[in-house]
Length: 412
Image (cartoon, rainbow, N blue to C red):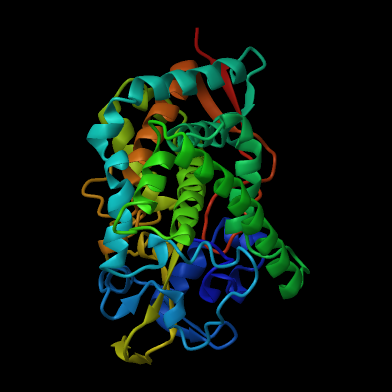
């Protein structure tokens, strides 16, 4: 979830520390799949796994590969205020506790539940695009749509003011980013701790309010679960759940929408016309974006026992990074894996993970992407990227760009 959490996601591999390398890591992935599909990085004290079959195995086998970073040999228990909040979430819990925590909010993210909200989601996206799209023929996909749209939705679901969305953006970015160039480990840790403290205080106040004045929102569901007679959620778990939903509820979709527009613009000038008004074709294209430019490129695990992989022995307590972005480009699994095919079928990507920890918010992200992109395509044609250089998000596992300026012709 966060580079403030498991150490395995703190350190970026040397090969990807240059921002240009993170903008296009796929050649490096290919080299690793061929030369070192399972390799140990002594500097990071971490195993890296690159091939589809192996990545899927790491994500799927809860008995052998734990999500709990506390299982790592070199784990250091956070002792600063707020530092452990992210760890107290289902993201870093193995079954059965993971399933208990997920069950608290699972119903809110089911496709049948979300379907009733689609008309409102379209209104939200339409309002944003009505302000952004005009005769000037320019917009920033991230700033004008991909960021504010999912933030507004998750804020509404939680029941927190969307007027605070700039704070949400700042917090979310801070929790998933890697250290700045030249930033010391201590300075980075202090900044991360400060962010978690601010978020913790914010949600504590919201939780106390919902205890006194419950509403028809997700935050009230979480508070109710926390105060059940069975004590299903501790105070820390309730806080962690709120933070997880806020961050995961906007970061992934922001990058999915922006990555989609980038893929469409780079692939074929006529592609947006082919996708416009065709929900099935758009849904297929979104799945291909999830494969070709996965918003989440890596997930962390800890070996719970010694295990052999590709002739290497991963020992109990070792950290393992499963490179989803590499698995989804594995030529052993996908024909013409380095080609964006919007109608690819079958498309068994693992862009949302796999197994027990398959992304809770996947139905919401898919719906937001479909709604946001269809509303955009209804308003524009001849979409193309500007000459502005793209800057990748500063993160060790989230893939996207900080800004995506485009030019277009307005549809009349």
